[in-house]
Each structure stands twice: as C-alpha cells, then as structure tokens.
Length: 112
Image (cartoon, rainbow, N blue to C red; front, side, top):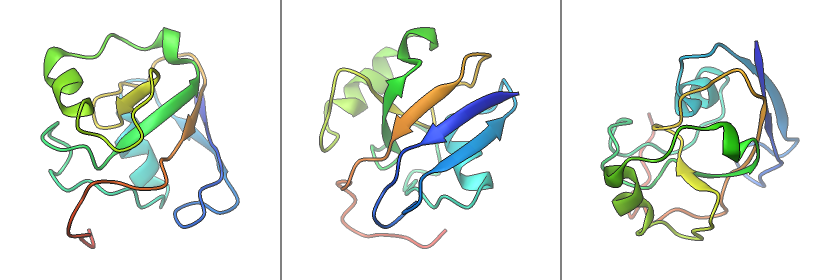
C-alpha cells in the first residue's frame, strides 16, 4: 500500500490525514473515497482545475503530466512547479505528501 499524507487544510482536512492507497487509483479517487471533499467540477475528466493539488514530496515518482493537464494547470489558482490535477495523478508505489490549495477557481461550488 502507498501512503498519502495530506497536509492540514482549514476547511477540507483540518487535522491533515494519512491515507492508504492502492496503486492504479487516481489521487482524486483516493481523497474522495476517504471523505476529503475536494472539488471536482468536471467529474474527474481533466476539464477544469478544481481538483488541483501541490505534491510536496514524491513528485518525481509521478508520470509526467499530459499536454492536456498542463494546459488546464495554467488556469489553476496558486500554481506551483509541483502542481498537478489530482484526477490525473495515478498512484504508484512511492508515498506522497500533498497540499490542498486554499482556493479554487470554481465559480459555483457543487455538492457531490
């Protein structure tokens, strides 16, 4: 099992979290399965930036972002060099530490 450490986020995960994940799932799926209610306005199809995360540790172990993901990331709030769309990050064997950005550019927050 891969361990995903989620740094504390004021609203979504105030205490932070340590999650177990099976390789092959996406990071967004793991977060949502563990009741961390990240936004995902496009239903995890790489058509928005609401599931944006910053990978603080383990970034180098991830597959490269596709051109489509890179194009979407250019629109994300708080973009950093280790930013990814969690719907596009496939969990591998290496543990990850992620930060959830404080804001998204979603104009209408949806309750999924």
